[in-house]
Image (cartoon, rainbow, N blue to C red; front, side, top):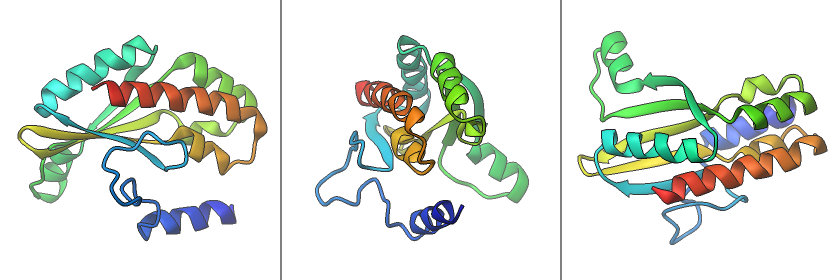
Length: 158
């Protein structure tokens, strides 16, 4: 529990930034906490492309939160489009559940789309491999590695 608290504090402090390594804008490195890619296109176009790319790797979008809309409704604040997608690969989720019954707190995998400007969107996911390392459960390692590779391929394919 203490390691999770320390990790959360480090994330909040910005010590695990996707752009922490000088000269790197897009990350697809299992040593980094985020997988990201900056994509040309509108958020609607990138969303459609992302959903199709996810299908190729047997992921589906099972939840979607439109943060801009929600914050406008709840706080009357304006922000650029920002969507949080809960994506799931059922086979991998089942394997993870067999190895760790409490893994549901990490499921589904989150992928965000955030508009940088009208023609640029950043797509970001947490790195499942790094998330699972916190649990010190060797049975999760291979599943997490495979999910990480798939999400990297999806995000970098956009």
